[in-house]
Length: 497
Image (cartoon, rainbow, N blue to C red; front, top):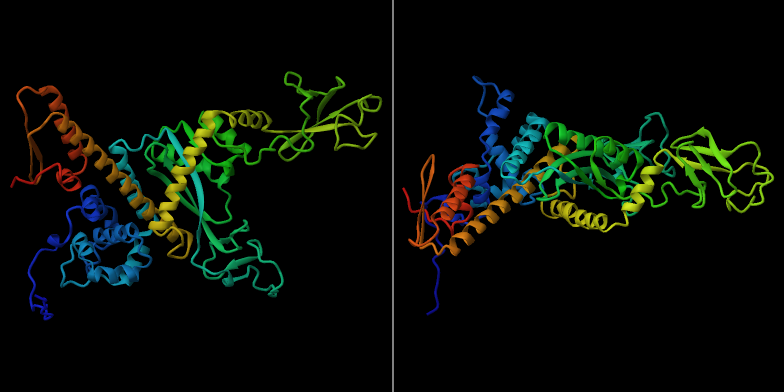
């Protein structure tokens, strides 16, 4: 028989929001591993304690940010609209159906009130949670940079000097022009980027777990090689990471970068920016020998070339006493120096030994494997952030607000790594229990503690089973007693009170 539905809606609806949220929903899992109670203490100084209208709860505000960046919601207006009808969002925020969500303008004022420093501390708190469970070893770090489009058009560019007469035919540059919409964004002249306005993201991840250990925003025109050393120093000093190895692409392959890491005894897997570094047209030919003890070159005619004068980045070595005039090999030792009577010279970079050493390492199997590892790990992090979490374009204007956006994107990416870690841990426990032919598992969840009772065959190894039970307790104690049940409900049955 053909059915017909009565379209009249009931006047009253009773029920619990939790009943409408699947037990495997992502926000349920996030709620188990992210305790935002610390946010209230962190933001207490921004509010008057005994006067004024109550503000938006800071915990609710940061839950809103988690939702926005976890699901790639592009604007505060869209976020507030989706909260109206998404019951999973309402459940996570603690908003019943008859309560209006906050206005988008409230989110803007709260963000401006809290400032960049507060968001940095939230990011670091989540990072510390990752450290607690062993996800961040901090010995191997992979670093890279990526451009993010600024929320400004290149049509907003105006001359930096207000007295300068505008010339539409004059080529626009960061030196002469600035955006009136977002003055801190800059143009990028790289091929394929069309002189648009950008910021640049500088990120570092733990090579083992791909957890983001550092994220930093600069103008788009800032070269990444000028940032890397300071950001590694920050991670060692602030986060206490025992960094012993840094992996990066050829954009960081400059002499000062190698020198700084060598002084810190940090091993680098960074290819040369240009394979011709240290091998320019005026560099010493392969048949010239460098006499390190006497700081000179020996040419094919057995003549010495001695330091003549230093220049920017290199020292020039030249023949003395007119030895080139009567040399039988004159005109053959250098193809690019054809002047008959001038003495021959070579240029030696200040970092020549380093360049030669890196060039040899680049051909090794280990070095090539590190480059492949770098490519899929950190490039994958950027791809994930731009595709799913809103890093493709700045939501706000100004470096500080874009930094806030980056902190939240990196935080939700780390939350995903954290959830993945728990899923893997509990899958391993389940596999071990299945091998023991456990007949029944009962977990009683109480308000302040978690008890575990395992019923097993009498002929099984009691010591090994006890070690598995201890692992369950250790994982549960890291966050709260709900973690085991919600993250892997098929393992643990909620049978207790």
